[in-house]
Every structure is written in structure tokens, then in C-alpha cells.
Image (cartoon, rainbow, N blue to C red; front, side, top):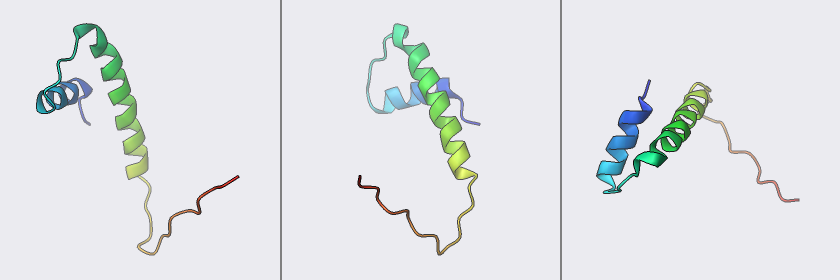
Length: 58
């Protein structure tokens, strides 16, 4: 499992962003949610012939 704190620090370094310490808990929380969502999506098995869904237009 990806460690959100390490990801946060590495991404900030690569992007040359200064992350204020007061924002770190929120950024870490959002990264944890993003990792959970990505894990759920990655678990879905699709056939090679799977087609994308139609675009909904009300």
C-alpha cells in the first residue's frame, strides 16, 4: 500500500512545491482517499473487448 505521507513529500519535492505544515494533514487525507479509490478501480477486471460507456447528455 502506498504511504500517503511519503507520496506527499516526494510529489512536493518533484514539483518543487513548498507545502505549509498546516496543510499537510488535509493533503495526506485526500491522498489516502485517492489511493483507496484507485485500489477499488484497479480491482475491477475488464475484458479486452470492453467498451467505454456512452456519454450522458441530459
